[in-house]
Image (cartoon, rainbow, N blue to C red):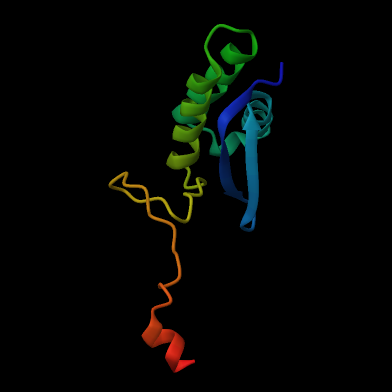
Length: 106
């Protein structure tokens, strides 16, 4: 089962290597390969949620939320560059309008 997350989860692992986790199976493999000495309760919860999603007991986005919690707890999560803590979407940049004064200066 290759159920895709609605939004991929981007992590920094190893020596700053960027990894994009797009499916429950990707998350499960990463969690399953996680070093035993670095596992914690958040890891166990995320691993169990991924297992449950793979067999259809929970939905994909529940598994994703648990995986994000694991990534955040372990300082692996990469926030989008334009993410703002207040939840307000940034406006895209646009060049200034070309007014007659600007055009005359060229």
